[in-house]
Length: 512
Image (cartoon, rainbow, N blue to C red; front, side, top):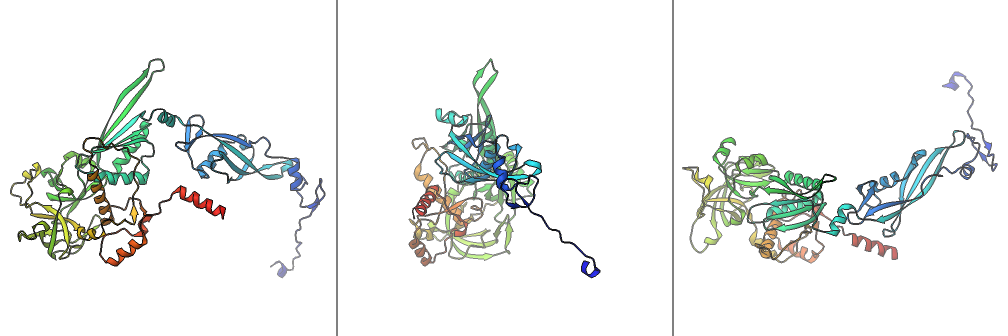
């Protein structure tokens, strides 16, 4: 446009000058010196620390932030880089531009950080310079770890988890939730008890946080107490030991329940015979005859505090003879159900009698003639439930089916390893304690693993890992069998990372 208007413009040029020290051609600056001469004349890192000592606790992998704060940080993490930079004194005299780690041997007890700083020097010229700071790591245990090493039983707070039932299925599931969320990372010691688990902590705040976590994943009620350990009259210091008693609801998944009349009225005449389909921080109840459902939180449950009429250990296996759906598919609480009329017979009655039961079930979407199903045998059960006696004239069904059974198909796969595995807590187990039965615990754990395979909702919040012991030959044989057994897809499994394997692989690559 300027050429079209006929205007003449002069292009601006940048002149060059000679450096006053070495005489090379350079662009002019406030000091009239090149960058090399400026660095030789002025050192902007003068007065900054080049070597620092930091305190590290090898037990809990924390670093001391004076005076008494211990910070959790992994090697070459952002947290550790921030901690190292903040340890430097007089860093406010320069402008920090960049910071990064320089690799050192993990066992060298040295951490090196490369810093790049800027500072205004002669006549407003800005000089940038990089330097390395070496941190010497001194191992020293923190107060809590030193107390544990001196006396492992020197705990401050204990959490006693209890559930008054005849099995440990709830604790198997709760153990996996604790591992996934790392809720017991501050526990000094974990001990398995007859009807629960004891967790010991070095601080009361850690125990309170753990109790709060358990309350978010299961319906519980808790109470706490404290005992005076020592008292210093001069400094007026009191030392207590705190105990938290946490009781988990005795109602478990797949339990058959008879609701109290008051609760039935408050829920709009639901039930009264219902099945527990899911237990989180609330209890999901389903009426298998109408597909009506409800959720009870911890406060609602402990107000009535009902118990199970029959538990999952009393399930009986049936053979499905005929199934006829009577309703369309309904989604209840994220699960699909179809109401159906079915004819079933007990597996134990085959060859003895011709007793056939006509039942209504909520499993019409998965049951087919010829399948096996697990259910509660109310026809021959001797029930003395107090709540059930309050319903006069109520006709109890002969059979209530709970889930499909794959026992016959599992017999063919017995002894073969699974493609997945679970981790476990580092728990102390007293095999000589009263009521300890290793065979019973192993059987219950196997049933828990089968429940995870059959129920995707149950394993949704858990971490499952690939099993390295699973052989490809076994995989091929399982595919060739063609049996439809519930299994966990490989895309749901996590790789079990072993640091020792990683280090060995790294050493091999370096030798090559």
